[in-house]
Length: 420
Image (tube, rainbow, N blue to C red; front, side, top):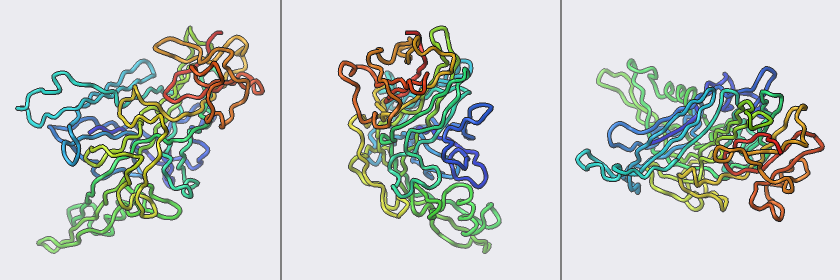
């Protein structure tokens, strides 16, 4: 099993993933610097012995948002196990993460190395970030329409301005999270035992579960993963007459979130501005797995019963034509999104253009004749580049504002202003 998630230190009284009360501050930048979510990244990679574990308790909404989950158990339709190899690479204040997986069918040491003699590695997860960054959790575009204004269930790639070192800024300005991964879970239980455990009754266990783990489904605070997150189970007595029993955590279907970061690094000798890293847009290919790792189809298969807030099942989701429905990050094409880049007043717009890092070298995003003379408009997302510019991302310059550029991307990018 492999899993990456965000574990939150929530502000008391807030159900927002970043512990904030204002949904307009997705990537808040108050005076004094950029704002990072009060959370840390949890990475689980591999298991002891040759085992395959299901999702156990699913997603604990009050503390955890799952970004990526991959598993294979050689049972219930899964055809192999996985071996995982993640690498964190630190350079100054920047970390680059690469997680690989390879399939194998080795159940015992006696089976020999088999496929792992020459592993078929696939890059299944990656991110890049720096200490100076802004963050947002972007929810999948499967949330019931009438529920979206509640709390911070934002499905669009939109953030507030994220300030650079040199006085510039950047933000995401459009696009929807239509390419996401989905997973089923299995039914589990949580137990209580009077005199032996912190929870000593059925009510006590439910109270603690809803206080620390799960969101109780209510009109003003809906649970995205199931109408009933916990239900009463066995209620008995031990030999001494003390109460013992459990509550049931029903099986459900969970849609992954995207942890999107806008990170800054200072200008280098090849750039005329600080460098912006947009990360988190490219790790979902539209994969749907059962609780044991069997392949399901997000576009046709219905989720488990009761996996929506109204008690119905999560429905099939239409993926964009670009969705690969596989795990290979190097092949994944993400949703189209807009990113806006604003330089400081000292930059001479006539001498620079928007550049992108490609294979370690800075290149112009598009030739000068392909740069659209217009402020950003969200309807650009549904358009294609003008004739003769099809080989390049759509890019524009907002001369009304001055020193402001924008581009449309469909993957993680690193951009900056470069000399013409």
